[in-house]
Image 1: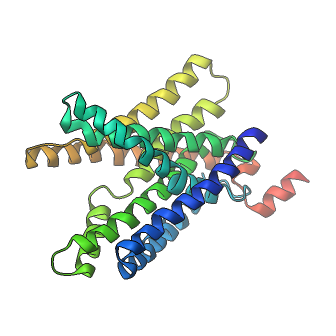
Image 2 (image 1 turned 135 degrees about the horizontal axis):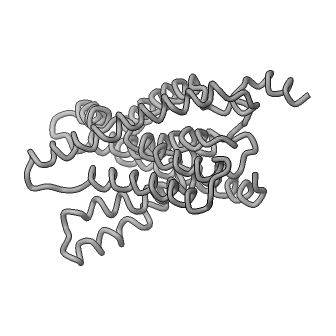
Image 3 (image 1 turned 90 degrees about the horizontal axis):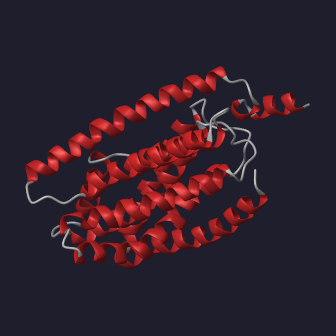
Length: 283
């Protein structure tokens, strides 16, 4: 644990909370009722995902507040950093003539880096986060915060853009976000977090191995996001692209969860016992 990382994390999380509230409240300016409904849908889904994540042996139970700070980084800090940098990156892609890749660069480049940075800060700020698989779990929560903030905004915008019904537009937009790439940010950031966790906490590994696993998993998250956002003139090509990314990301994520759960179950440290068991272990 690093006090410098922990202090910085708290400061940035405060800024992230403000950014999250500003982004969320901006939906009320678009449509107060639709903004509220979009927020409620997001809250239910976030609660459901957190509940499922807590059922995993990979969840670091004795550590307090890490999930809240990870969520605020994803939903506040990472979103703010992405908004600041995405515009110039998009213009750069357009300026080079690679117009089809403008959404890929403006999405994958700032978003994956800013989210992965949050994973590092959270892991380095809590003593109980000291196992490689904790990186996957922290990444999932950071990605959940980002996805929740993004979906709240998209849901409210979908309501106002529908020609006939705000409610129908809201439901259709949320349905599209949940069916086409469900949990995309959650799994992409968890993928990068898996590499970060192993780079930080794997035992008896040389520096070149740690750099390789860190850069390898971050590059995988970046490339999958890049491909997912890539624009095509052909609808068939777009469908093939989305299916290909899904066939890589979701099976890989399932494998990582199964492996992480197996490793966590085999480990008897205080990092994944109950809070009472942890106190007993310390005594």
